[in-house]
Image 1 (spheres, rainbow, N blue to C red):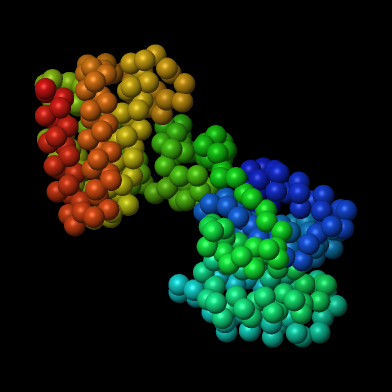
Image 2 (image 1 turned 180 degrees about the horizontal axis):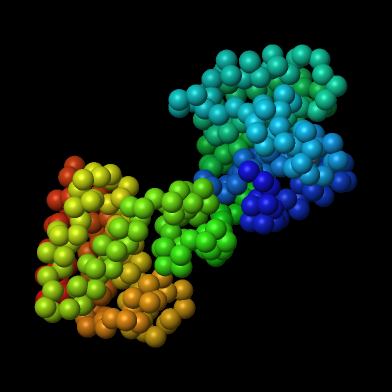
Length: 325
Ligand SMILES: [Zn+2]
């Protein structure tokens, strides 16, 4: 892990940390707030590097920085929820570590601070009060409303913007991920790690191909979209992975949005540009909208569905009815 990614995609946060550090105005407790995948932990490690780097520049190269990157720096403590919550014992262990005399600056990073138990939070608060000035705490959360007010009021809150779709696209392109795959993935997540995982998963390519076949068969009278789905979706049934069905629906939704934009000659931000250039849209705008509504309504229900496969098949039958009507 290098700090390049967080420097590139969370410029304002890095700027704030850099300037506070240079002006000697860092506070002792930070609360980093942002959605999943907004690089909060990377920024926390960056701040730890600023504080401990031998060159004072979070160089990433000196011994301290390298240790931080590997997670082996003795002055950086990382706490994440054990199973569901952060327990009092975890905070006590932290206190114990910090009570050992050391002249060095020490940083503790607590992920999902909103999941700390009341007992955990209370001992953390007490610990923050007693901590000496070489001690820095960085608390991370995806949901500030779930963080208890006393923690909020004692921390400097730093807000992280979600990584934009363009930044996700940029990061995928930089890594050589093909255009269409990058485009699709950038509509599915704004979590950079998740985007990279999806890009490396070969099933995603098959899901995209399935959506393209089904989506274009709707436009052709001589094809039966229901049959197209059945013959090409065996891998979905075999994988029996709920996530894959949800990706299928979300990508299908993207394609419907694309078709509608195409019919309106709004050709910016089209995900399936090549596909729509090579194929004709035969249905009317009203039908495309209706199909989109069918997919959205199944997507809303699918969380409760016991049998995903049957639900999707039922959806396909409704879509065929709409396309023929
Ligand atoms: Zn360094």
